[in-house]
Image 1 (tube, rainbow, N blue to C red):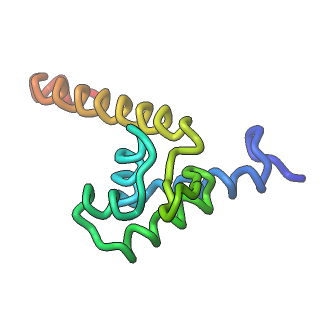
Image 2: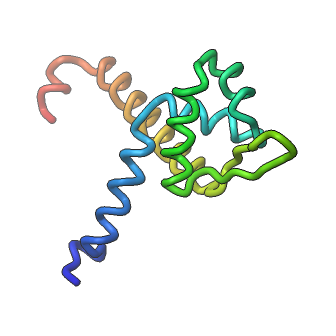
Length: 118
């Protein structure tokens, strides 16, 4: 199996699929709602001011990716986070973006001559 800097082609595909799954803002909003605990589709629809078919579609994608799990509770199906590592990944991305914005802001304060020497 051919590797690229330590990752096999199969692993590259899996990582890319995970990032594609997380690349949809609505799915990130669903994950945020689930971070505090399990929710039913109806609760998510209300919290996100969405519609059932859209929320269900995104939950299925998250479920297929292994990011959320589901369990039956009486007549309801509750969804919850099954891979909490996703929040560490989001925190890393947030920190990286904050650092970049901070550097950009600091760059704005430099004299023009200093900025052009980069």
